[in-house]
Amino acid sequence: MAVLQKTPEEWHKKLTDEQYEVLFNKATETPFSGEYDTTFADGTYACAACGTKLFESGTKFDAHCGWPSFYDAIPGTVEFHDDLTMGTKRIEVTCATCGGHLGHVFEGEGFDTPTDQRYCINSLSLLFTPNP
Image (cartoon, rainbow, N blue to C red; front, side, top):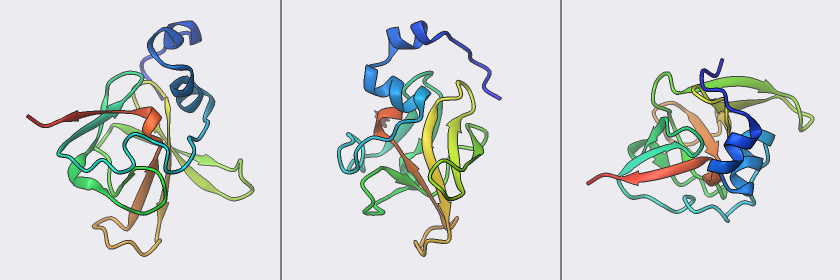
């Protein structure tokens, strides 16, 4: 359960309209349009809403799906929820701190990753900080 609660007005002051739609109305950005889809610099990806560090760049890989893909999250930073909205069962990924929608996680797609998982994450839900 998210520990940081704010009103929609408070989130709107911090986020763009597009970020708010993704994070708090569970929208999905257009594939191949996100700022971080092809970013592979060393650094950390944090929640755009609350700043919680979520993913390390060492877990990012190119899944050729149009969204940033990671094979693991920083432990304890994300939560998982059943999502039945598209006529099939998917697993939604949210920020454990603020509850913001990040994307979905998929398993068993044949990617050669240590976890056999693909976190498919909206760029609009992230902020990237490069390592010094």
